[in-house]
Image: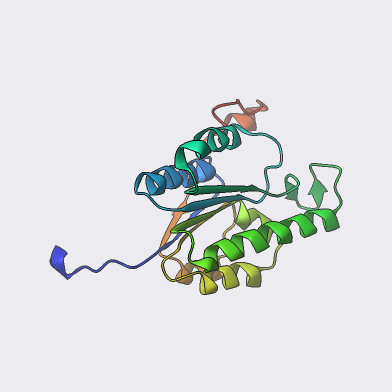
Amino acid sequence: MAFEDYKQKDSVIVVYTGDGKGKTSAGLGLMARALGAGFNVAFVQFIKMWDVSEHQFIRTISPLFDKKLDFYKGGLGFFEAGELSSSASKEDHITEAKRTYDFAYKAATSGDYQLVICDEINNAVHDGLLDITDLERLIDDKHKTTSLCLTGRNFPKSLISKVDIASDMTKLKHHFDDKLLANKGIDY
């Protein structure tokens, strides 16, 4: 097939998943590329409630992209295998995940954004804070000109056929396995 036979879609759905490092970083890179192209972008954070370096970065650059970048920080921390990383109850985690989802859904279906990044949404679904049908609805209902980026571990295999690009970040080695804590500016 010749290059001129290829077509371009109005939007794409991108997934960054897996147990390796780099999913949020890839989403941030996509955000930078989209802002550079003049897109309106919504970056929606589902899990990280504490002040991580990417939040500082987004707040710093937001004035440079007046009305082009919206940042929504939701979530109450990691919730994995029933173990809470904060004093919030499971019900509190679910309530906050749903509130964050509602913002993401409105952004993705409004037509106001060319890119909506849902960082750590896959974790929220896997951990039972959102239902897989919520994720499927977000994918199915997004505006035709809005690209969607979904990050986090454990993207449901049953939804792979609904996305355009899926990358599995595979861990080969991580210093956490050697009982070393995350480094600011590198890991968070």
